[in-house]
Every structure is written in C-alpha cells, then in structure tokens.
Length: 113
Image (cartoon, rainbow, N blue to C red; front, side, top):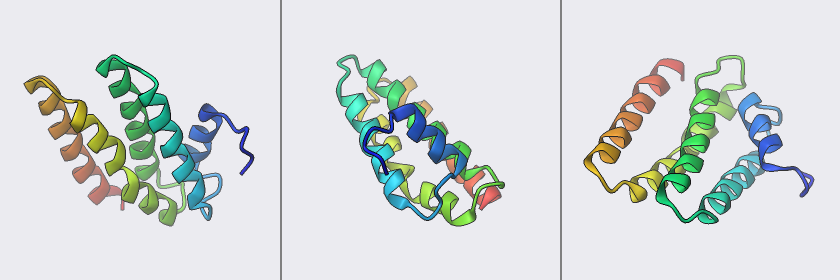
C-alpha cells in the first residue's frame, strides 16, 4: 500500500472492501484513526473520530456485497474503536450510548454474518 494514501481514501477502501485479501489495509486504517484521535484534546473530538471508525466498520460488516472474509475481519477489529470510546465515556449518557453500540453490533453482526 502506498504510504501517501490519505485517511479518507483508506476509509473508502475499507468500507468498499477494495482489497479484501489485504488485512494490512485495515491495520493501517485503525492506526491512522487512533493517531487522529490522539491529536485532539477534547474528549468529544476524540470520541467523534472513534465513532467514525466504528461506523465505517459496522457499515462494512452489514454490507452483503462485500466479501464475507473481509466483513469478518472488520468484525474482529471493531472492538478497538469501541474500547477507545468506552475509555472516554465519563457520564451515564455516554455509557448508555456505548451499551447501545454494543447491542447494535451484537444484533447486526448475527443478522449479517
């Protein structure tokens, strides 16, 4: 993978399953997402980056037009942004949202995979 591929391009490649036999692509996307989140100070901004990553992976998991093994790989890695958001959750509302994300993931992954 070309090192100059930007985050948005990489995200589209992940979401559309462009290289389903290249798990390094997913590792790079997750690392870039983590680096982006770390660059922000307010917890809300870091949360937004992790939520974007989570949403991208969840949408990929639920897309039956994408290779199943790629979707399973995304499922195996979706815990990373989820755990990052759990660490940032400070209020009961935040924690309730995280529980809902866990529940949504459980229901959707069983339905689509």
